[in-house]
Structure formats: C-alpha cells, structure tokens
Image (cartoon, rainbow, N blue to C red):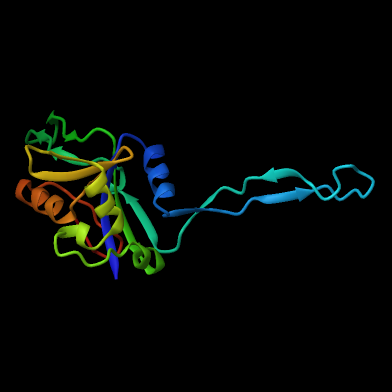
Length: 179
C-alpha cells in the first residue's frame, strides 16, 4: 500500500519541519560523551552531547513537483518561431509530491471513518490537517486544501483533474506513475 500526498509550502524549510513534525524524518540518537577520568569530580557525567541530525525514513519518498517544485497554473504563449510572448505562471512557493509506503504508510493509515472521503479516509496526516488546520481553496475553488503548520495538503485526484482540463504538465515519478 502507498499513500500519495501533494504538499505546498512557502519554502523548503517549512516542508522539512512538517516532515519532522509528522514523523517522516526521524531524529538520530545523540552521541553522549562521558567524563572517563576517575580523578575528575564529574567522573561518569555527560560532558558533551553531539547532535547526529535527522534521517529520512524508509518508505518516505519525495520529489519536487515537475522536477523544480514549481506548479504551473497557466502555460506560456509562444509565436511561430518559438519566442515567448507571455511567460508561464506558477504558484508561489514549492510543491512536492510525497509517497508514503512500507512502515511509514502503515503508521499513517487512518482508522476507518465513514464520514471521511478522499485522502482523509486513508491518511492520518491528511485527516489531522483537515480536522485541525485551515480549510481553503485556490484556482477559483477548484483545488481544495487543508493547511497546517504552513503546509497546504491537496487532494491528488483534484490536482490531476484540474491539470487535465487545462492541459497543463503535471508530475511524473520514475517508473511512469504521474499526476
């Protein structure tokens, strides 16, 4: 089983913090350095803590939308020779496609709730965002999202339908699955 999420944030650091908050990155254990001098009054005490950082969990894959993180809302126009007449327009910030699988997807799998539909029926993260975040929409109400911790969580099926009706490029994972 896998769960796909489409996330939008103002910057990469917001997305990283979101991943840490919701258990997609895990903190590596700190290295503790002990005083080993038996003559020292602090013998056996921790004298230094080394932060070993964070690691991406197995089963958490992410990719910037269309390779750049830019989500196109309007195609550019070009003349017969290919010179740009109007530039394409993009949503401000970064958009990422996230795939949860293996243990991460198992942990994120939401309990059955007949009142939930779409991704909120499958994902605890999406359900949490929907129930505790700010509900909104963009693109004239065509794309619903739930925003929590500075990250907007979109419904992949709505994104795909919206892109298709506008003949806009989406995102393609290696292997051919696309949005």
